[in-house]
Length: 138
Image (tube, rainbow, N blue to C red):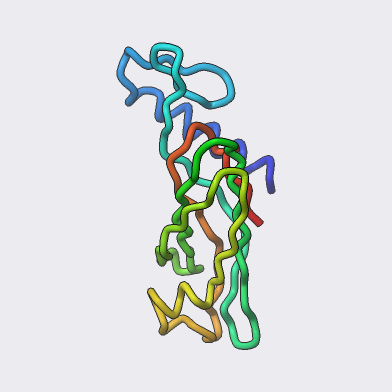
């Protein structure tokens, strides 16, 4: 499953190269550079499962692997129907971790799904950074 997610990310990067202007040159490790300076770009990482069904509480743990700058991440819940529910963005200090509770996010953004049968799915984490490896999630 992990290898598949990494392969998908690589393909997405390869397809995006055609939209980058000619002054930007793609180098190794999925980074873009302009004038020898790394360029931050939109990234996505994934977690395979969350649930808010009765009796369950899901906690997402996010770690910023950057040592010198904060990282702002928006968790987006994906339901089995394909519907997406964006939760509040959270800013993670350099080389630190934070926890995001799904039930609190649902209470603020989509309370109809809180503690209901069928309230489960996957999570996509959206952020802008030098590399997808700047975020670790559990």
